[in-house]
Amino acid sequence: MSIQVKIKKLCDKAVIPAYAHDSDAGLDLVATSKTYDEYGNVVYGFGLAMEIPDGYVGLIFPRSSIYKKAIHLTNCVGVIDSGYRGEIFAKFKPAFVYDCCKNYEVGEESSAYDVGDRIAQMIIVPYPRVQFLEVDTLTDSERGARGYGSTGE
Image 1 (tube, helix red, strand yellow):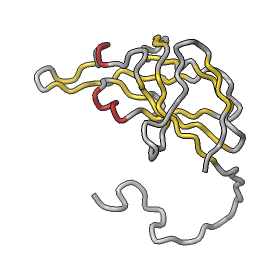
Image 2 (cartoon, one colour):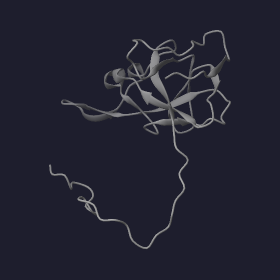
Image 3 (tube, one colour):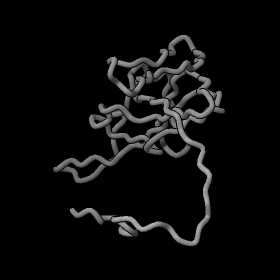
Image 4 (cartoon, one colour):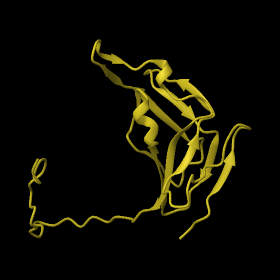
């Protein structure tokens, strides 16, 4: 299954997202800018705007290389709705890094990504329109209301 998504480069450095391998789910996103917001987050722009079709959403995840960096995606998964037409951004928050000799410290600037790096990946997926039906009772299930830790250790 494939869909067409209209995409617009907003700057010369912008790179059209691409799959590194035919079997990949995520399209790599390359940073074209790096700034900081008023909360100290590292804000990366991708120099791209797109028109995601109705009924689909773009989900932005960090790349697996994030384990080498002392930052993490601020909202864990970015959501790009189909009606959004602005530049695609991702915000990363400096993380605490454990150093056995120094205890915990805030990540250093050198541990962030640079402009030109592949820093995130996007997956575009369909989603259902949900209609809630309010009821007085729910059907029983094996799990029931058992929450956190209900499956064991």
